[in-house]
Length: 163
Image (cartoon, rainbow, N blue to C red; front, side, top):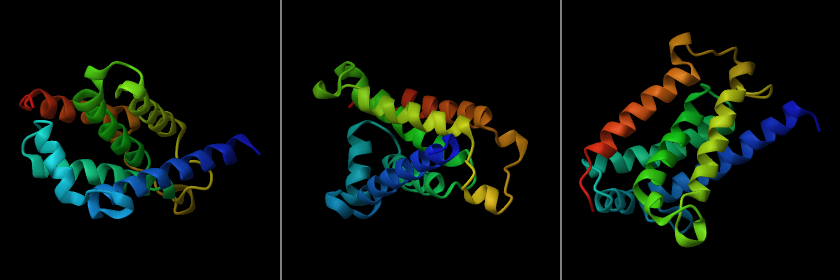
């Protein structure tokens, strides 16, 4: 298998996993809590307004996964997943140490890094972006998007109440 094929396979599989997880958060599929449960969780985490942050979390994972899966509008899918994982790290896992066995950030950090690598690597040869000759305008590059995502999450997390 070539490097390009392997990278495309990783992009598709990670995208599928996040689409599936996003359906849990949005629709309650696969044993998930649905949007109402996602909003309750964001409320418990102190993120205000909880409906905004809950919907953003669900759409970041579902929509980001879908964009990544399809290789569409690169790097927005990877950045959406990174944003969701950054909030999970900061608001859920950070206080539990590193290892996932104790609720730590290990697993969320792995997803954050994997999405970042896919964001940096480009959409891939088999992506819809290439098939449709789509390119986002230069100001929407990975690095600009990353800075904007960190700024928005920083404001949200900093202004959240302690749960």
